[in-house]
Length: 291
Image 1 (cartoon, rainbow, N blue to C red):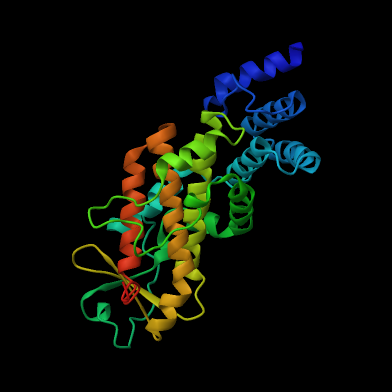
Image 2 (cartoon, one colour):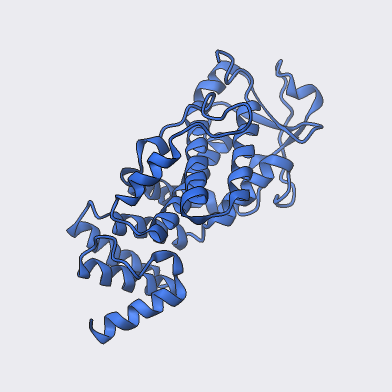
């Protein structure tokens, strides 16, 4: 091992414990060096160099799981996005905390939506950090695209109406997902980091869609019990427009759960994300009417 590589490996071990420098995860020595150099550059906030190194490595091997995962993490870090953003949005949906000073909520809905009579309108974009999240949409979507091929199918598909049992249990093959991930060429620490970044990107993407990306104006309400209600002029269209985003929220929960149960992660974040998912789903009248 060269002195340069030894120093890079030691620095990453001290600074970035989630990257798993004790194992190569099947990487070539060149890829190991590139990733170590990119991680050091990222810690110095030299995101241009980190991204250039990783994109160069990806050009050499587009299928490299470690490079794809590290580039996704770098894109999110470059935008200043981390798992705390997911926690803030989840808590904001659940109980209204983690919000910025109240932004104008707009006119109350004038249709027949039942939430309009008892709820208080609020602006879903008033959560702390939302402008930065909105400005990062392209990087968020690229991070999802980079990690999607590395994930088991059980973590990328989610039936929003049946994948959570009545007792709150997530209905999916967690053990099978963990086994497939361990066979991906990533270390356990790299898998943990990838799942966290994937959950973050998917959760933020979905929230952007349901809060700003609909083709019709929607009004959000905070109900007296703290739950959420969402009204629109065409309720059936609202269901169809939000269905993919709500399912994507669910896949974020699955990544968090797999990480927490099999690779080390916070279970309270799983609970918060699950509750936020359920609040949004249940706030859309008729979303699971056929179940």
